[in-house]
Length: 116
Ligand SMILES: [Zn+2]
Image 1 (cartoon, protein in one colour):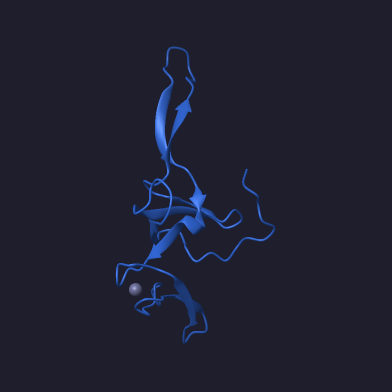
Image 2 (cartoon, rainbow, N blue to C red):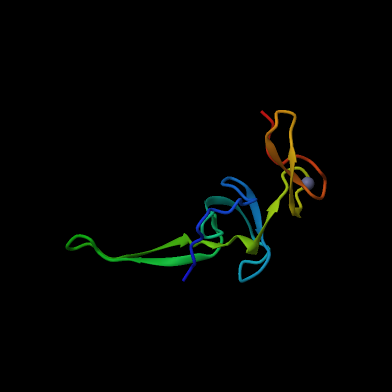
C-alpha cells in the first residue's frame, strides 16, 4: 500500500527527464520518465520495473493476453541524468534572471531546464 500525501511533493524529476535507477533489480538501467505521481513520490520510467499484466478476454472467442508494462517505482530509487555531462546527479535550484526557479546539475552546474 502506498500512502498518499496530503500535498503533492515538489519533485526534482519531471516527465520527459532521463533517469538512472540506483537500487533494486533494474539498478543501472536508464530510461525516460513517462509519468510522475507527486502525491505518492513515485514515477513511471520507460522500460524499468516491468510487470506482466494479464488481460481477460473481453469478447467471446477472444483469448486473454499478457502485456508487459512499466509499474511505478519510488522516486528515491532513481537519480536524474544530466543532459550536459551525462552523469547521474543531484539537483539544485537557482533563480533565473526572469525570477523563475530552474534546476541545475550539482556536478557541472549547468541548467537542466532550457531557459526560454
Ligand atoms: Zn551535469
